[in-house]
Image (cartoon, rainbow, N blue to C red; front, side, top):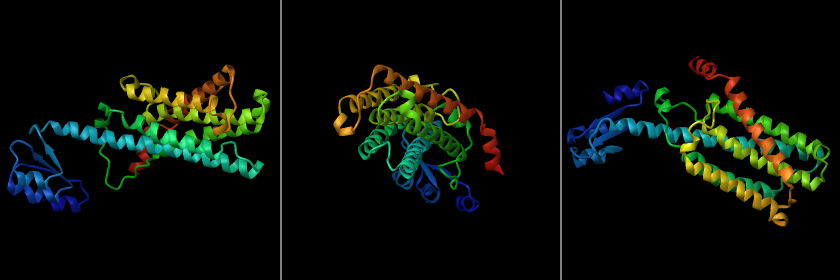
Length: 283
């Protein structure tokens, strides 16, 4: 029975507690054995052992499994947004003006901060009840879904447009020198990623702050990231090739990054509803 179901493309889970269940537990995609009543042969043949022998525990297993998968999608979307925006901005400015606004040290700083801090922040989100209302993910379904592409391209596009405008007109807009303008671009770019972490927490919902108060570690990581960025800009000037910014300039950086992050989060969730992509995937 398990073999026939797998041949038809189904993902098969089998529960068992006896020695005679071992072949089916091994053959299934997911084998679940009972921790109390199950035999040692059944436990060794299974992938998951239900320690309390309570079948309702499977709901918790499913919820956490879906939560891990969703967190992977969040980080992939977040990381690709950074990479696309960085690549396009540096390539366009290098090809047009022969110089890049983000130096090698600054790019390394962005990668170190975002790869570690953001990964930890997005990976610590606990699974929600809404995850159980979604259909299961098929074995051949891509991790980068249409929704991820939608959010990724929208967020990266707006970041690219803003950063290129600052690169071309930033000195006249803020009335600053070229080095200060490059510092502003670097600062805004990093702060955009901080606010993009909120957008990445929920790929389908407009209110991205919903439920974030329950994750204290997420807020702690956001605060630490901003603190590191302040140290990078204000204290490590020679190392990062930056200039100190005034309170007004810091306020402008936070304002642009916050408004950009929330506008992009709203537009990507509002203009392209989930139903359209669900219909596309079904088609």
